[in-house]
Image 1 (tube, helix red, strand yellow):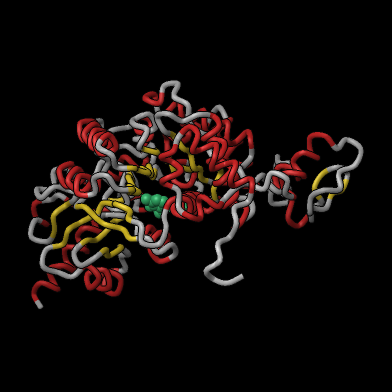
Image 2: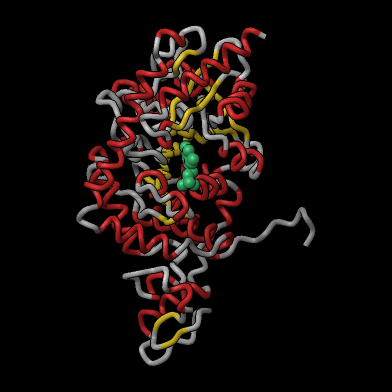
Length: 443
Ligand SMILES: Cc1ncc(COP(=O)(O)O)c(C=O)c1O
């Protein structure tokens, strides 16, 4: 086949596209070329295997695992590290969509935490290899080379790798904070949307934000939702990605505690909301790699959501086939544990105290010559805007002369993860940063 020849659409992709076009033409228009091609192989090996799991009571010779005594075979030297879990809960392949009961439990949790969703119909969450993978899959489904995505200028750097380097899309930025560093720059955000009126746009909203640790206030949240809804009403076609990686880490009464997905999933037929969330930071299981993608749109139907879940699972099948089964099982058990919420709240309380000590230390008047503090009220991080010293040079000096690790972002920003500092360590971290900044200013 020559490079210019088009790959013909699989009939299952055609059927999925048709289901989407019938009820939500806008979602079809928003899909990338790859997104339009994708489908879940409903008669493929995994699907046949799943069918056999239900019905093959005599003998199941379908799937590529090995069994013994009716359960997945295992080595004792592996199994001894797990207690209380069966080999079927650990070693068998999970479905490409994710474990059904985990998807259900996560959907229930999302709705409980997001009262604004009400009873609005959204998709079932599809399990991803944590949020990085979720963001990549969303990019694959909606971003063609040259497409534009909009983000705040303070963002997690992996967006660039996933959406620009890998997919050839282009990220444009608006300033996250207003000039006085008082809060979210609603004006710049609204202006950026207006400048792109009538276009297709992928918008990323990440609150609590990495790197700043800021979540908009309730009033700012209202303005953000209004700006997006107005842009959609005026003809822009939007995919709004709610990156809720740090959901639940709220330390201030003023910040919006509900995911933006709740209101955006029913805002307008031109606005597809995509919730990318997961257990990584919320449940403190970073290396376990369990995340979710959930779709919601005002005129969404069961047929459209099924087609989107199929496309998503198809992309997952084509790259990693399925996501860690032990991770999914453990996260599910945790969600079902009566102690889950209490234990989670205890850990968030530890972070809240660290955020409070950080707030006192970093804002001491004696450091006014060294930095401005970007507002923060949530998440794992806070960020300093250094005065008169290059961020990476400060970072190196902190490492070499003080043994303190921080992250330099751009020329002036230094990110401090208070989430992994003890309260006792925090004062010395900021005095070390001040000392490094002053040394460099004197040079
Ligand atoms: C804003 C944001 N989104 C997504 C991720 C990815 O998280 P995960 O470890 O679940 O892939 C991170 C991780 O640092 C993040 O900061």
